[in-house]
Image (cartoon, rainbow, N blue to C red):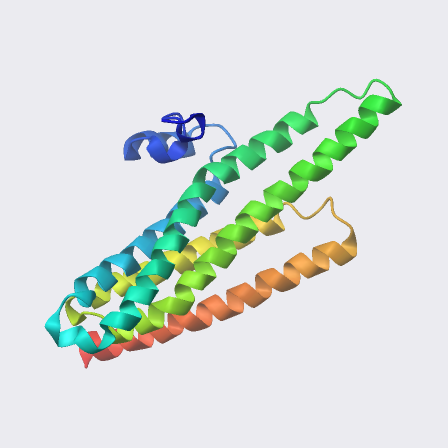
Length: 216
């Protein structure tokens, strides 16, 4: 096992241990890691629905397409899983940068540079989580509509978790914007609102499909 795959990483913690770390009086892991976990769970559920569809003779017509979708949902799941730890790591880098000394001009310049880099990371990681969750939501309506009908509730649950991850990650982008210049803030906010609008629309599609299949 490499250093990067250390058991100390959040993704290797037991569920109860991870929840205890989230609940502890510590700023990290926090909402960003929880958002990534929510999205990873949502994508995993879409993969589950695909796996219950792809080898069934009644769904042979969608098997090639679903094989393509499975590659996408699994890539999304892998990248969101990585963001569980990356979000906490980014916050810890920001916290360390804040503690750097500033006794003279050289130290102040060094601290300012490190803070700027760390601030970008605290925005970049949740933005990545938000974007990946949106990518999963773009797939969800097709999985819910054409997947194994016996797993349609799992497709719906996956979509709900993906939107929860998207919305939560969006909040973690917004909270880290205050130190940026106004034009940069406006661009990040524009991206957040666009992702929210698109993600909510995809979830509404899935909800409509579920109403038809569960109550039709």
